[in-house]
Image (cartoon, rainbow over the protein chains, first blue to last red):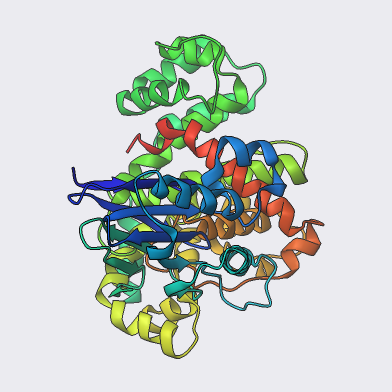
Length: 160
Length: 280
């Protein structure tokens, strides 16, 4: 296979060790990368907004758009490929803001907060994260070994 | 360095006369279908792009459009003006060199996204679409096509100021290169004989507070740009290193929820407007 691209408001899972799940240009959006090392199942979500109460119909039709609909679906999709909640490793990236964060549109922060609440309620632990700041990020998740790399628009690439 | 940059502006080709002529004709409600068809057909590259875009779901024609004459007949005055402007502007973005972005299409997609977002905001705030705003939004980053090479050469110095001295990207451009991409965009607008409204929107698209209270076009281009940057339809390596101008929300009596709805609409509009993104 190869690179599987996850667009904005979308999610994909794979258990094919030749696949790399990749999502480009996260601004205030968030990528949630989950991986079960025992069965080598990986899933990647790129959500844009915290809460589907904004538009319930959209939450149904396009669940990857929101944290509260996208995150549960991401986990369920990986369970259906044999992943187990107890083994899943969670890494997140994104939630950037523009400068001067007294600012009028704190969507990045709200996205991060939504994620923490959902994970806290469901007793899921975030293993690693690269959130906030003011650069765009591209996230890759390697199905073979669960390695997550984050490349920022300022040019730096790091492993999470 | 400034001299070199100003020289590069002189070398930018004049804006295509086809677009200027078609734009002028379309301002008159009583335009002639035949005359307009002839003008558009005269420039084959533009005509081809007009056809490609005319069938996009974003413009939703009721008939399958396969000739320029059909586009002129069925698209309607306002959508036709947008299509013609998009076709004309795109050629300048196709040639973009190294610098802010790794591929030309990245900056073009950002430009189309800001243009679509500007109309989402206009519908909500002005209760109408606005063609001048559309064109200003589409062109807002045109300065980057000249600045790209210079930014590329001074990349480390610029990023250093952004990372360590809390400069915005714009302030760092000014400090290192002597001019920023917005001011430069305004100069290009002057070279193309664009009206004052477009020039100001380009010049002040990161600092609408300097353009004046009443310059709604500039404020809306600013807001549309910021929303697109946040949503990840990015203009390149400047990322989100731009200053928030807080007054913008009060000015339009706008709330975060309105912007979230706008973002949602933007994703849908962009999916319907793939033909616009893919003409370069």
